[in-house]
Length: 421
Ligand SMILES: O=C(O)CC[SeH]
Image (cartoon, rainbow, N blue to C red; front, side):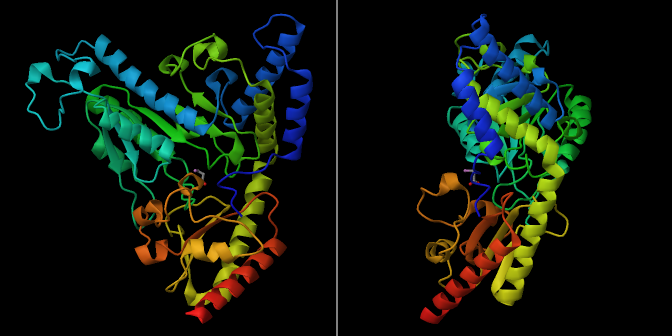
């Protein structure tokens, strides 16, 4: 019941990986048969991943996972900003970042003719750490200014008008996740793209790039990069029954800069001898999504809704469904729920459940001393409710009979904990 943390390999994916490990071990850069065999698998996988997000194969770069894909976008944006400044004849003196790092434009009165501009990023306050911590690093190092837009406590979403209001002449990238990993709330990325493109060009005569981390959305809802209108989109294999690698959609590869250097693999954007078997597995996982996304989506939604109905019947006023807002859409598989009452902290309830495993929030925070989810607090969930939250995320194989077992397990544990008080 923690599919948003990770998913097992689909059996067909495992079979493809195993076969590739055995038969496609050659170096894909080698131009003899053994290498060519590997290269063919990689190109087939690229085509399947491209089809999954409705783009051309040449717009897909394979990476080690969502974190690397997100880092590539953010570091590329830094480079793009300086490329733009060095070529734009604007009358201002744009100093290189090293000469700006000691100066904080936001706190100094810069004379018009020597504006020391740093790139400006716009994001939200509910992003994954592989976005937030990179941007915090940029700020600490004086490399960029960042605006963290608060999502609405009434919808769990950020609105396009907030993005437009935050734009500055030096804004280079907007990054907003497509769906949140804890609440499942889907963000209006397509609407942001439509408004951002016209507004930034009319107001600042610059292109502001748009990225979305689609890690939690792919495999649960249809994802079409052209409908979304994004310049970059992050893909994470282990969220949709694929291997622990990832990919990055890039609308214009010329806008992408490598974050490390080596051989010419991935057209130089992501050097390193390719992980052929895992790439082949990612391609199979993508192929399965293309073939089955409607079925996956419907199955997950039916079971998730049955879960929430069952919890409300069993617990009535003692249960709160978090992340469900009248004006927002949610991923079909995510249920964030709190059992109300003193002593019913989410981690304590889960520690006593015997028939299923789940989490109180993002897996990458599980090492931290338990504090309630910052995402839930940001999304308007009161602290005493957020501290009692557990995240239940349905998988492709979760059934209604599974849900009956889980709800009965929760009922027994919560009643026991209440009786012990
Ligand atoms: O939300 C999760 O568990 C995956 C990201 Se760390």
